Structure formats: C-alpha cells, structure tokens
Length: 233
Image (cartoon, rainbow, N blue to C red; front, side):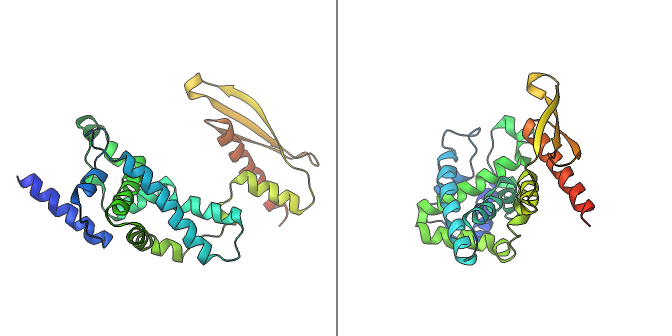
C-alpha cells in the first residue's frame, strides 16, 4: 500500500513539474511503463508523442527563425528532439525513478539509459495529446523547451564536420575532399576503420579512426578542417 501511495505522490509531483494534470491518470501510468514491465506499455504513446513533438518544435522554429533556410531549420529541430536533449529533459523532470521497468531491466542499469528516458518523455507527450488534445500538448512542450528555444545555437555550429569542411573549401573555390578507407580491423560486429581525407589541390592528408566508416570520416574531416583553419590564420 505504501508503494502505491508513494507512486501516486511521485506522479502528482511530475504533473506539477509539467504544469499539467491528467484527467485520465491511466494514460500517465501507461506512459511511464516500459515494455519490459507490462503488455500495457508506452510504445504507442511514444510513437504519437514523437510525431506531435516534431511538429510543435518545427512550428516554433518556423516562427522564431523567419530567415532560416529549410536546412538550418532541420538541423535546429534535430538538435532539439534528439535523444540527448530528451534525456536531459527527463532528468529535469526527475523521471528516472518513475519509469516502471521489468525485473531484469531494474537490475541491469537500464534506468540510466538515455534512450529509455528519452522515449518516456515522448510517451508522456503522447499521453497528454490523448488526454487533452493538441493545444495542451503544445503548451507543455513550449514550457519544457522554453530555455532551449530562447538560446538556440547557430545552425552552422550544428553541421557535421564533413559538411563544414566541404563548405569551407567551396567558399574558397577549392575541390571537394576525397575519403579513402585505408584499413579495417576487428571482428564483423566490432570493426575499427581508419580513413584518410585528402585534398586534390594540395598534399594535405589526415587520418581519422572510428568504429564505423562514417565515424572515421567525420573524425578525419574535423582534423582537416582544424588544419586548414590553423594554416589560414
């Protein structure tokens, strides 16, 4: 009985942090339930919340950034709805201990996994949408995102290293970089790539390493961009 009382109290505290009170408390209970714990879990609500969140953030950015290009808006939205951001919001809401997990997940550290915390935030938004509709969900999303929307990073800072390098070279009329895999080691499930990045109009070549070709290319691009910026000073 005490556990039920504590759970109800903790969920009421969560509602205070969300500045939203559920008419149907079963929706909140489902939103907080991982698939490992019950057949009545939160994955459908997570799916719905993901879609609603993406639209609300897209609309907010569209209004706040009237001169931004489609690409810049996409990068900004991606930074706001990615797993790392949602997990941070989950921590701000102190969601970790409220998530209902199965016995195995309770003992293997799953509660600390960013993906589970992020998915739960989306499920809660889906639950609010089912409980009260779009306007209420939008109000909660904008409340949760207020500090982030007020302090947006520059879109350029969100570009990956390969894109930044290519734009740096194009702005100076130089050829695109070339990437080549120089070695692949390790078992199939744990391969390690070494990739070179070279420029057609110079002898500059750098290498990047990572647990995948794309990761290694990004590391190499970042190193090449750093070198070019140093040389141009």
